[in-house]
Length: 84
Length: 203
Image (cartoon, chains in turn orange, cyan):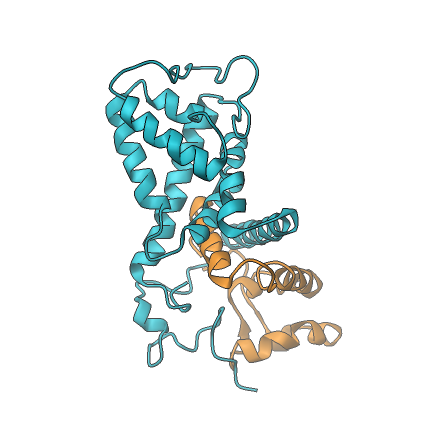
């Protein structure tokens, strides 16, 4: 169980609905925002800033192949003892 | 990684890279080794245990010769890095560790360049000046990275550390456990789970 409960889509204030729109398809009909986004959904603007950072780094198609980036992600997560 | 077509062994290869670099960093920083790639430092090379001189004959000579050859090709240096010359005080351990190092870092299921990226990422995450200097020329050569490419690598590491911190701090449970590579292939139970290479979500 996470430290903070996950937030539901219908709990997101109207002014922040735009910030969570990209998650609706990803969550495939779930009412609750779970996982790594769920941990940030109590502050949607922050979640979006991290999303933009991810698009410019982890998901950026530059010189590093996607497999190398995935390998780095696994290696760093293991080093940081990250269960997730 | 499994979704990208890597098998269970390929994922285990990355685990091996991570633990090998983590253990090297523990020794290097524990013994307070000063970075010696590309140039050996002036003065003492470590604060705790001095490395053996390269020209000293002994049981470790053959292994040190192999390391020197690798270091010349992969790191562009003419000396045996101090980490290995410190281990040379215990030739049996040096020999076993070098053999493991080659198995772990040479091409297996995964390309050497992929492993070099993972190694550099772990060296940075471990905050090891010695290991960062050691792996820097190798990852640049193996993956063909210039300074801009290195920043792309660094940006990815920043993102992973951020995500790890959030996930750990919020005690997120792992989304997948007890997985097989086939779970992410067509017909597998996790084929529709979110992630790189996943089918697009329904609109």
